[in-house]
Amino acid sequence: MSSNQLDTKAQAWSALFSEPMSELVKRYTASVFFDKRLANADIRGSLAHAEMLRAVGIISADDLADIQRGLSQIQAEIDAGQFQWQLDLEDVHLNIEARLTQLVGDAGKRLHTGRSRNDQVATDIRLWLRDEIDAIDALLVALQSALVDVAEQNKHVILPGFTHLQVAQPVSFGHHLLAYVEMFARDQARLQDVRKRVNQLPLGAAALAGTTYPLDRLRVAKTLEMEGVCQNSLDAVSDRDFAIEFTAAASLVMVHVSRLSEELIIWMSQNFGFIKIADRFTTGSSIMPQKKNPDVPELARGKTGRVVGHLMGLITLMKGQPLAYNKDNQEDKEPLFDTVDTLKDTLRIFAEMVGGQVDPATGLKSGGITVNAVAMRGAAMRGYATATDLADYLVKKGLPFRDAHEIVAHAVKTAQSEGVDLSELSLTTLQTFDSRIEADVFGPLSLEGSMNERNTLGGTSPEQVSAQIARHRARLS
Ligand code: ARG
Image 1: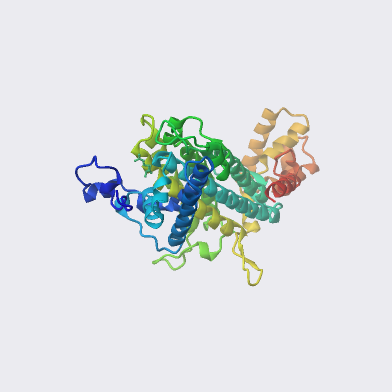
Image 2: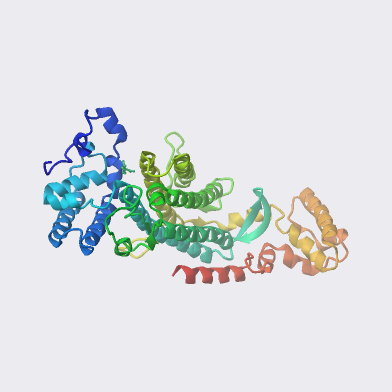
């Protein structure tokens, strides 16, 4: 065989094949135009494998040196955009191996000893995904920090808290934002948990059954900073559950972003006018000159469907595959790549949109959401947000809660017919509903009184909000 035996796919396998692939089948089966993204992981995996082959005496020191030199040149060619990716060579693995053999001859042909593309590709995706999880973790921290900053500035700002999108009770706007911090904190923990299962080494499983060479798998795992080795060769090459659970965790992050998006969109509509986001996250209309549309949150809400779709794609991909590796698994990459790209872009843009961005030249922060506390307060005033507080007041005066609830319903009805808030009814009027009502009722009936009194752990009082901010800051620093 010549040293460029892998030059074309038709020659890649063996003399067994009597006819070349048609162009259509080549295109259908090739993955190089998307899996070339795994090149760096592929090279790192190959270097670790080669170094171990040398350590256990399977290849010579000269072979290892040749492989290292060749792979470093290939990495440089890829970085410079000069690497010639060939469709004929099907995927990233065969492309790199063929180029290595072209560059260093026989040593390149020895690299694949004790290895199959099946354990190779599983290793590459895991390495790549592990590093992406770390990047996503940092972005989740940045978004949470931005939310905590805005929460801190707004812990005394009153927002009508909704249930059923109807005014329910006054809450601190800071408290509201911290609800999202909780969600993103759980997302972060979930991804850390997924990372443990991603960070296991398949190499050494070879095609499916392990290999006859005395490979030192633990050594390779250590070189690649993996936490362990996959313990069953059939499982190692065939399962993609780590990719599925990553995509599930990513879907939840996007669902949380999507909920926040929906709120931002509602809050910035003219009917609410609670917040503004910086112009650079909005677009105008080609026909209506007055419009500023919340495109970024809307797109994030839309892209959530796309990521959830990838989860469905991957989970369906796995279903029905017999052990061990099947080519179906080549279809894992595009959904996974797109999930990572979508998630990273979304988190980056949201951190900036929520918290603003510091200009490195001036040190000044711009962007970030602008809060209209007056509008929020006005909306809370219109919705009888302190009705529960009046009921609680009566309970503290000795009434059973159900009776208090009924009495307050009558008070709300009267206030509604007069077009005023409960706090705007006179003491004499209030006393017609229950004689136990005294002048001290106006404390709990005010929005501030209502909010400040909700001082149970996790409640909306500014005191609780401050405590949560301190906890988050310690966690995020
Ligand atoms: N491109 C393939 C994939 O992504 C690599 C593994 C191919 N293995 C095989 N036996 N055909 O899954």
